[in-house]
Each structure stands twice: as structure tokens, then as C-alpha cells.
Length: 226
Length: 226
DNA sequence: GCAAAAGTGTTTTGAGTACACCCATGC
DNA sequence: GCATGGGTGTACTCAAAACACTTTTGC
Image 1: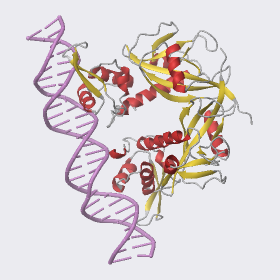
Image 2 (image 1 turned 90 degrees about the horizontal axis):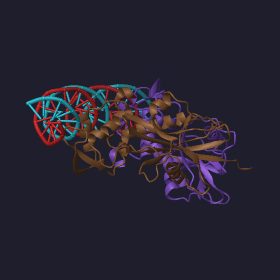
Image 3 (image 1 turned 180 degrees about the vertical axis):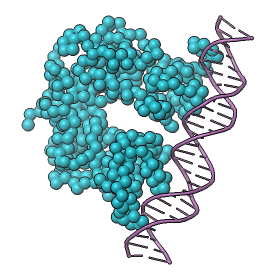
């Protein structure tokens, strides 16, 4: 039996929180197929390259985020036969979570609010679905991991962390209960001893990310959102 | 730029509970590479075939589980360059959960306790790791979904469902609290009105799976196991 | 009757929710 | 002083944990 060989790509769902919106890195296509539509940054993997290595390389080359520390994890793989009209392509999607960064210098790559991408603009291939899967993964992971801190700068306040949750989930959270919960969670936040008044009012303590991956007990979304 | 083309396989982690052990479908290799080692059932995808379709086809052809209703979901994709010594292969792993079924008629395919596979026997490729990822996914999913019922026959008792949890997690659960929790969860269990005494003692009510996918609130594993 | 397993009731504990209240800064 | 947001205390609610107890079968 001959072994079919096909093209394998890595596509990137890179999310951040900026200007009070959950936003994703979008690639504006300037050639067929889907000229004028948006797509996710991505590209073909090399023959001697591991999948996470390909994701990192594309994050630097295509997404313009070279040397940026971000959380990167595999999302899912998409491979139905006609998803690319030119040839059979199997795409391994990766999910990246980044703090609010300057957009890439490439005009083709820009941050765009997820809501606008999903509801308004035309998407290339099945990238609308992949983006949706990435957003849902991020929303779910905020519940039971400490990943929300990946959206924050190296030093951040409890209120900044809370705004990440509120924007990603689209729900308001009680500041006082949130404060108690995250400062009480083991290994989530490490106090730096410094404070800041950048948000106004009483100085807020600054924290860095702790080593804990999981959050026990989880931070549950308010019921109506589910 | 030329597009590298490579082979794509689907590998299957098929789990069940039988003889008080969490067990997986194992393929005993009889040719190089890794002759004599165990591997996961799997095979190359066809050019005109979607990934879930390939998983179903291989579940029937290679795993010998044709026409069996089971839960099937994508697990993860593995693709580091030298994972197969013969050629570059990217493998999309699928996780299947099945009730206790007769083993395949093929001598090459048999149910084997997961502990034995992971700790004792020699594994081909990176299949030990893939199996481990599948087991961990199954363990985690029992917490917040109703998937435990996928390990049960069409009609089952609360005690049988509890034994699934206890075997998969390797922890004892309080029968009384478990009973209350699972019969109270909305859409998890549908009473048939029938009873059975196949486990001895007072007759137990029989249930079928309800439509609910998610379990709110979740069934948490006892803390020490984590 | 007795063993075995199913199923219910009750008490205790811990976590989530709501909200009153105090604290420390900028202006 | 006063507005603004940071942070603490406390009462209420609800679900999980622990376990005593009753029910219904087989033998």
C-alpha cells in the first residue's frame, strides 16, 4: 500500500487583552484563495522540525512576535479534505496567550477584537471555527488554571488580573471576593513588595506569576454565561 | 517555496474498564521497527478522508470494533521528526471510550491493563506517552462531564457507574454521597423503571445515559490523587 | 434470620456570595 | 476634604463530607 503524503501547516490563534477587548492576531490575505478575507497567521512545517518548534518559528516570522515570552499550547488539528481549495492540508492549530504588546511592524498582521472577527468579517478556510475553538479553550482554562496571568505584564495588580477575567468572560466579578480568592490561592501570585497607583486610588500591591499551573478550587464563571 | 509533504497517521487510544482494571486496546507488533513491542492501533489516513472518518475506519479495521457505539474525540497531535525511524510521520491521536466488550477476533489486538503497559512492557514509537495523555484526559473528563457512562453497558446501576470512577481514578468513593450526587445531576441518568440484582443485595434501579454532556457542579477527585 | 448491597436522613464543614465598611493615595 | 479605587470583615447560603440508619433482596 502506498502511503499518501500531504501538506501539514501550523496555524496560530494568538490572543491578548487590549483596549478592553479580547483580541486576536489576524493576517489580512492579499492573494487568492480568500483574497481580502482574514486568516490566522501560520505556515507549512519543515521536514526536520518539531510541531512546537514550527509554532515558535511562525510566531516569530509570521506573527511578528519574536522573542516575546508567551504561553503556547497545542489546540487541535483540522483536516477535512476540502478545507483548502488548492490541496489537501492538515493543520495543527496552536493557542498562544500574550500580554498587551505593540502590534507587529508588518501591516498585514494586526490585533483585532475577537467579536469583530467572529461576527462581522469574512474568514478564510475554517479559521473562524479554529479561532472560536481557541477562544473557548482560553475561556475554559481561566477557570481551572492560572493562565489569566499570561495576559498580564510581568508585574500586575489584582485589579488588572480581574479585568482580564471580566473581559475574556464578558461578565462582571465582585472585586472583593475576587481579591480574596486569588490572593488566597496557593502559588498563583507572588507579592513583589512594590505598589503602583497607575489605576488611581489607593496604591495597589504588585505581583508576579507564581509557579502554580492549576487553580484548586477553580474560579467558576457566573452561571448565566454557561 | 516548495511545500514539504509528509505522512499523516491516526493512532487510537481505546480505553475500557474490564476485570476491575482500566485497560487499553493494544496492538502487538510483529515486524520492524519495534518488533515484539506493543503499539497503539492506527494507520495512515487516505487523501480523501476526514480525520474523524479515518479514526472510525481504523477503529473498525485495525481495532476490530466495527459497529460498536463508543465515544470518540481528538486527543492531540504528535510530530517530532524522529518519532518514526523510517520516515517523518505526524500522528493525530484519537481517544475512544468503550464499554466492556469482547476483544477483537484478531490475535494481534487485545485488551491490556493500562498499568501493565505503562510500567512493564516496551512501547513502540512514542505510544507510551500518547497512551498516558489519553488516560489523563479520560481521568480529567470524568470530573466535569458525564463520560463515565461511556464505559458502562446501555443499562447500568449507580454502583456500576461508581465502580467506573473508582477504577479509573484509583480511589474509593462514598457510595451514599455518590448516589445522591449522580442521581441529582440534571440529565446525567434516565431511570428505566427496571431493576437488577446482578450485584447481589437489594435490587438496584437501572438507568440509561441522559443527554447532558457537562456535569455541573463537577464530580471532584479526592484531593490526594492530584 | 442474616448478609449484602441499595438508598435516605442528618449533622458538620468549608467555600462562594453579597455587601458593609475601612484604608491610602491624588488632587 | 473628597473622589477613587484597594483591601478586610462578616453574615448568609449551598453543596460536599461523614456517617447513622432504613429498605429489599438472596440464601
